[in-house]
Every structure is written in structure tokens, then in C-alpha cells.
Length: 86
Image (cartoon, rainbow, N blue to C red; front, side):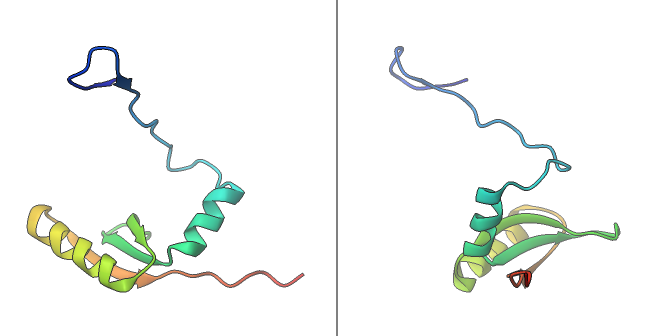
């Protein structure tokens, strides 16, 4: 729990989502709204998405902060997937 100065107000911490959890429809919709991804590059075959943004300048600003504070290699990608044809 996250507590504040006020003793009667406590905010629950967000629940962790497992990496292998299925993608729900609202999550897929949110991913389409935020196509610019900051990803962490690794020697693994798959990179890890760190954050998603609606605008490229926001992703670039986040990338600069990550490069200054976190060890590792990061990149920006545009990951807007086309709709499947019925």
C-alpha cells in the first residue's frame, strides 16, 4: 500500500501483470492509440517494450531520460499493427 500524509487515505499499489498474460481487447485498443514504443534491446530474440506513447517527441524525451539513468540499449519503434482483414 502507498500511504500519504493523511492517515485515512491509502492508495493501493498497481498489480503486476505477467509477461505471458493474454492481451485483452482494451489493451490492444490502447496499444493502437500509442504506437510509438521505447524498447529495450537485448541479446534475447525478442526486445522488451518499456513504454508506449502517442507522439514521437514524447518517446524521444523518455528515451533520453532512460539513456541517462539506466544501463542498457534502447530504441524507438513505430508498432502500429494493421487491422486483420475479415
